[in-house]
Image 1 (cartoon, each protein chain N blue to C red):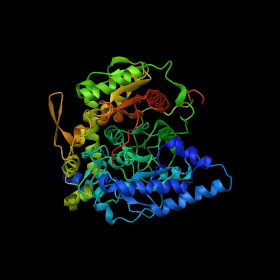
Image 2: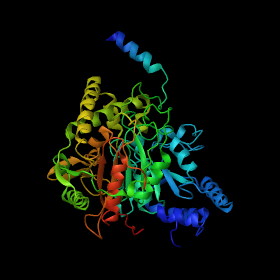
Image 3: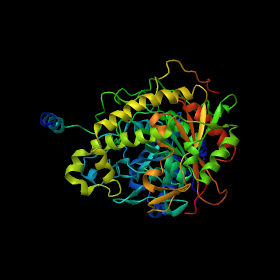
Length: 41
Length: 465
């Protein structure tokens, strides 16, 4: 636990800007490759 | 003076036809803001000089006979977590006051400027978007334009109130757990929370990277659709922007609902809604010829997972400041930030594992339905300072519980239109209805919204300000 907390402290010391997103961000579903929507009126 | 700055469709048409200039529209908007915002407290920053330049540019375009962009001359304002070049991005906080001004506009502000819209200012919100009430201690509470003793909802409370007060016809907000839909519901305006990953969040102050959405609040379905179409664009610089192309909705929104399978959510969404909230959902069900009794998969668990995810990511984001200057945080939410930062990692990991399972179940549900209906909030706007809600005999803490009905939906990432409904008819306060579609099917939610607007049931109402 002591060694792990040292590692965590290293990460803590690394400057992270608020807009640095996680490596993977959630996706609700794949973006459709072909639109199934009705054509515009 | 007539408020010519309000009414998206009429305003855009009038400017294009030369009935009034963009500068006249802006002057009307500014006059309305100055006359009402001392009581509403929607605005935390005003960018009138910039707005005058943008409006003048539109008028020059028209004078030269050039084609006007789709939102030419439309006044709008943004929640103060959007970067505005030269302004400090407050995100509702006191701490951020010491930050450097933004060096460029947020991506969506750039998109709206390119579409001809005119930015008039920045709007009040819950600190760091962690709240549903906009009772902001640093900048004062935002007041509901339909009853100044009540909350406007949050966290995009200034955005809902500015549209409801007819200060601007369009405002941008963010929605992690309901922060567009809750103020839309409580202020009686239209709101659109798009699919998670549809609109770029670049240049906005985050709350929860894995759940944050951005979107418009507007005076009409046309206002939602036009602004949403203008803001769409892939953006490789936002890791959470998954859209690969623009899928316009403006052309299809008037197609009606023939052939659409529309249902009303029951169970959790009825149990956690008071009688007026259930009433507006049933009114929408009738107008949209929907079928009652649809079960949403595991909504209570989804709400718990959304709660844990938000607390954990939000707490982690602000950990350094929580350690050193917690006394400068919003007193109404700092405890939630601290407890979120202290949550065991196992809670967060478990919530993420559940989310994958949940996503599959929600997407399976939409193989059978096109649009699903639910109330947007359990109640109409509570009085400012309310600590407890009574929801069908359950005593629940007010501030986190206003989002009971929105959290499960945004955790899946589905697009939702919040439609302004009026359970007491010509008097009384609004409660919104959620029109929910499958991921990437904003077009279907907006088609249902258009029908609801045409029915006369969902609409804005002038406040008595």
